[in-house]
Length: 55
Image (spheres, rainbow, N blue to C red):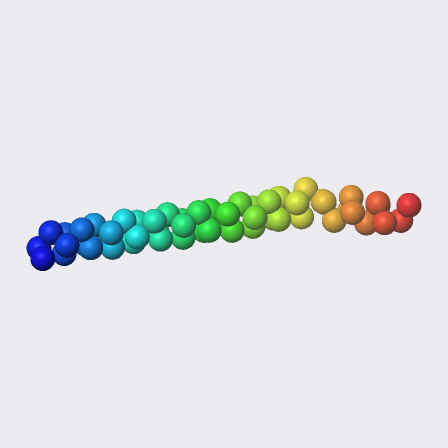
């Protein structure tokens, strides 16, 4: 019984670590998206898009 409790505990710890890694990847992806969006507007990307629409 004790062996199964140990195995279950290891599985739960592994699942928690995997969950944290997935959450970290989501946060990094959102941060990159926001940085790219801010960089796009700061460098005048909307002017480039508006110029393309006029043609």
